[in-house]
Structures are given as structure tokens and as C-alpha cells.
Image (cartoon, rainbow, N blue to C red; front, side):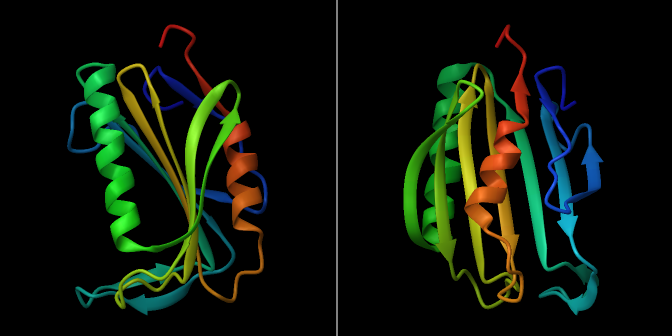
Length: 160
């Protein structure tokens, strides 16, 4: 569960829960991450040694004052994603009666060790949900399919 708003089924595809932070710095902001495969040590742009996985799925649930504010925040998240990566495909998908804008992309900054990704953006009530699956070139999984299967396992509170 993330807040009382979203429930998430185990995602399959070898994804293992790495982190589930019930509340981040913001009062109504939640974050979870899953990984695939064995990590290797990687030195990030800050000079810190971190674990780098073949693929990693991030989920952000961002609470806003109301649905209008959530729509504005979602548009901002989506615009930043489009500025950061080279979008290969953009489409609308529906999972569990929830519409998502989905991007498949490549590239990013030289500081990003992931070569490609697939991300989904949605608004539900006063919440923005962003799910992003990133992978290294060596990962042979079908990112759009893995993300779609994950979204099939996301359930929203009917009150939203």
C-alpha cells in the first residue's frame, strides 16, 4: 500500500522490492523501488559508490491539493521526462480503468547509467502516479510489457 490511495500487487518479471518509503520529504509523497538482477558497484556523478542493477522500477505517488493541481504537476513531470530523454513512442494505455500516458525512450544524460526506459504518468483525484522502468543495454526484458504488467497490478481506492 502507498498511503491509503494505492495498492500494488507483486510485479513479477524478477522484480524484487528494494525500498518502500511511506512518506518522503513532502507530507503526501510516497516512493517505492524494485530491482531486477544482481547489482554491480557504480560510482555516481556525486562520487558515491552505489548498487547498479540491470533494471530498476521506480514508483512515485505525489499528493496534491486537488485534481487540478495534480493535473498541473503531472504535466510538469511529463514535460521534464520529454526534455531529459529521446522519446521513441508516446501512447495512452488503460490499466484497471485508469488511463496512463506512457513514454518509451532512450538516452538521457551522460551521468545516467541506464540506456533506455518506459514510464507511465496518471492522475487520480489529488494524486499523480509516475512509474518509471529504467534498464541498461544488457537487460533483455521487454520494458513496455513489464511496465504494462506492473500497471495491471496497481489498484486505486474507489473513493479517489
